Image (cartoon, rainbow, N blue to C red; front, side, top):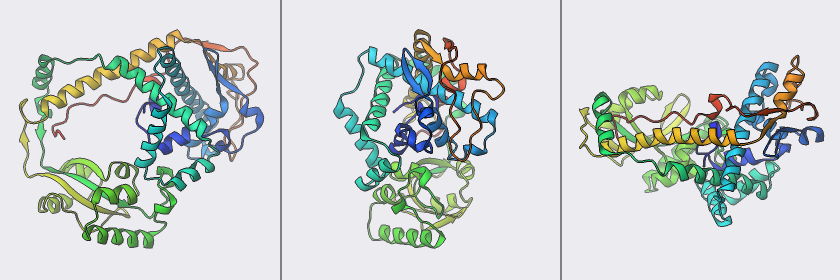
Length: 398
């Protein structure tokens, strides 16, 4: 799933739920706020409640600690992202790229499984956020449609052999197979991990519970339990949970940058591939590491080394894809009729930027959209429009 700017990346179902949840999750705003239009895209309203909801999510409920200037800037950036998302969705709709209902169902089910949510957890999450399945499906429909629209244009990208060879020759220093290990991990954290989407039934609440849980999981592994299955169901880290524990390849420097113990590499180098460590406590979290692959020494790679050509081809394709997505967004934005009421209110009321500071809940609403609207044709700030930085080939192809 892709969402423009911060929304233009893969997300879990819990992130989808948070985005799709209705205005009540923002802290129970007034009816006036719920009916305030922040912007329109080709006549389609984007409500201020949507902006406040996203602000509440990003600030983790602590937006009352932000200054008036910080609140105003955050609202404009969030509205810019929501506007871009709506623009791309409408273009996908015009190009007849909307998904079928079974595709939407499959996406939600897939994300629910990857998030290790039971049906009860899923229903509780919907209820806690006052979210209907209809709203969730509407957001999933947008995600799939935007992804299909981007794929329509990026699928035309080609990279030839000469381009691959030229890149390799200009970046030989990058292609080094470093001494290191590919790892999978199960993590147990005594802190509250609900913000990561970890179900409360799977979240150790204190140090004693965390130690008891990690010891129990270690015994399960010793008894023959599958590491990936245990990671998907019991790890308290969103990334490892979704990937069955897989966290990729680490050189010695990579381990250090990740904040893992310096002596871990020596331990891993002495292990058999497929084996796992005893529980290890690092920065108050408990870890079980599985060795998926190890490289005993550093060596230079050539174009004929396994995976190098494919890695360069994919990296160049991704770089061009990012540019194509940015160009698609620019064209779609320029063709759209956008009216930014929130920005207009800020111009009308520059002393308070159109909004009062936030209280204990989400900030108070803007005044109703009766002031002269500001029609936007220029592309929003680069921070909101640029896709994620394009990956560069690594010296350690996975």
